[in-house]
Length: 184
Image (cartoon, rainbow, N blue to C red; front, side, top):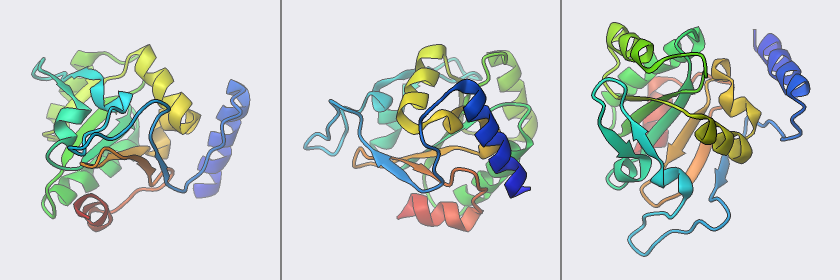
């Protein structure tokens, strides 16, 4: 299964003509021009993006959430069974440590109302938002095309110190693994 997934990701990258390297190792980064402030908050553009929760309509930024505790940002799609399996591990991880979760739908064909129905049906009680084209482009430029491939279960960690890291690409992390990463 892992070999097939690797082959599928490689094929998608070749078809897309993307030359960005795909790596399963963490990618800790701050965008050019981004910096941490003395309060630990980052001027990282990812922190300042305004997102809208599809269930409540409330707007929020990842920086607001990361001010108090680590944030797990997962790119996903409603149809992705790998994403659903990872999200079930996130539910269990919330019982082990305190962190914020945001699931970001990156499929341009999915609607906010359908995403809200999905989150409610599955019993996931964190923020769900839809990525627009600009956000998808920003994520792709920063982390590579695989971050927009939901079956590879992309997970981005935003720490309270303003740092941002791609974690566990291509692998499902268990609840205890997530808790160790997010609580540490």
